[in-house]
Image (tube, rainbow, N blue to C red; front, side, top):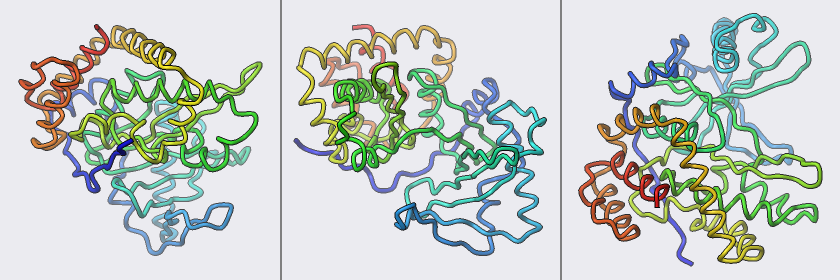
Length: 342
């Protein structure tokens, strides 16, 4: 098997007027009063270690007391906007316990840990530099996957809720060999996740870019694989970069599917996912049409990568119309149309 290699550094694409209008129309835009760059103004930082004492490559940012008081007020308000639409009744019980910063990766996010004084329960959300391709990815996830996504945009700042689950690479290390694992159900979910990513052209879904949400059922566990990284929405040029099965990091999931599935069942689950996606398209057709119109007038990849993907998809679908597409938005529209109507 030939494994994928993803572009090391993806550029950030600005939010243009038409996309900004879309965000306003669908209540994704909010004046949160704080920006990504505001959080960079710390006085010092300390490394964050996991429970085994390993460096996580995250650091906790430290701020002077007066600045931290201002940040606490702003960041708890943002949390209420994400979770309750701005209802501030419970905000007095919340405080910012920690502000972490990721020192690796493309988006270099801040992770905000919110604590509830009444019961010591905590939650997270993330603040990042806004990127048009990532926003398209979040919107497509919201409309075309089984999952709903909460996020807000303020100028060049993006706020995303935390997606709960076991990181895919940690699941490989600690869970995939457990006797209680339902191999068939996990393999089925990986096949469906693989198809979901390909349907909407979401790339770079290596194991550390998705989580596995485990739900105990009345007899055995159920699994849902959820992406947590949407930077590579319609960016890469090679078709296989949109198929998680071709990443070396995901090989244990691929092997699991090979051991438990036949070609016939794999095809069955792919068809199931396409049918379910078609139903989601129908349920969200007005909103999806508006989003694809934004994408079709936007630039979220390079001409070289766009031309490569056009050629590969034209060959895959045996449809030369792909060669007439002007940008990734038009490519996605034609690709999605072909897969859910044929």
